[in-house]
Amino acid sequence: MKKVSVIVPVYNVEKYLDKCLTSLVNQTLKDIEIIVVNDGTKDNSQDIIDRYAKKYKNIIVIKKENGGLSSARNDGIEKATGEYIGFVDSDDYIEYDMYEKMYQKAKTNDYDVVVCDLKYIYDDREVDAFSNINNDLLTKEEVKTCFLNIYPSVWNKIYKKELIKDNNILFKKGVWFEDVEFTYRLLPYINSIGVVKEKFYNYVQRDGAITRTFDERMYHYIDNLNGVVEFYKNNNFYNEYEKELEYIYVRYLYATFIKGVSKYKDDEKFEKAVKEAIKNVNLYFPKYRKNKYFYKSIKGLYLVLFNYKLAKIVRKKVNKNEKECWIFKKI
Image 1 (tube, rainbow, N blue to C red):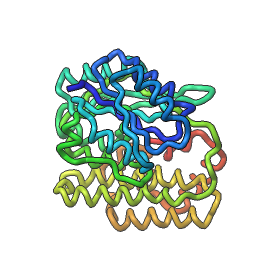
Image 2: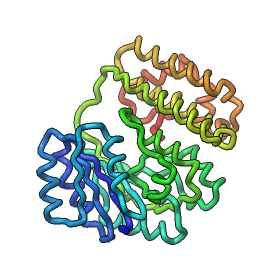
Image 3: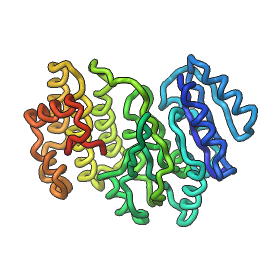
Image 4: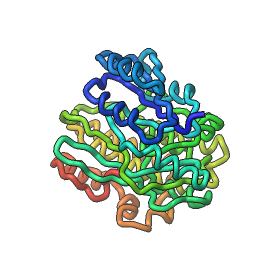
């Protein structure tokens, strides 16, 4: 059995793929397998994959028709033989000692999950970012509290393979924001989390202006979270996690989702999105203002006071390209 299986979905990333694969084949942890999933790429990415696969025997190549990021990751999970599973997006790259140090941490206390910090990589600068978990979480109650602030990406973490496979937690296909959906469905099964406070993962911010045309896939935020709530109800987790679910549901819809739709130029579609967020919060968590978690920070208090007028203020700030909109800062 390999120590770590690293799953790398590939789709039209020839500009970035060399750097990504170089960072993987040079890992100081040698007992890993690198599962590269060609998700129907239309550029020259497969030529790059072939070159690396010919030279490095620990690269496993999967070719498939295009099915999206979730589909590619799921195929990689099915193929994985490692004790732990990690994910790397093919336009990003990692530090050479990432998996050695994370695996060492995992083995110190048989952690279900290990997380690290990260950096946003821009053309002209690097910005440190953090996992939002500062200390090891050894009890179920401690893991439960990480609902409130966990950075929901999968690529700054390694997971016990059995945690994912035994509980049949795969990525939802055909949606945006699949990491959030995956993370919150997996959390009830996690009993311990180890933390490595080093910035191992380099999250590359691609060139190009963000489109101002509304994309209906933004509503996947709402659909995914509704699905998560139903998952907790159907699997008898809801009563134990109700207050934490309530907090993250409202936080994502009234913060992350609203910030996302604020950048689009169509006023009518912005108003529709805000109304949809309010409607769903009222449907699923109409008494959320009584939730104690909202009263522990200024940001939480803002969410208690959320209304359409405040959403329009945020819209103005986002469209002025202000780097920091204090309540809607990415979490």
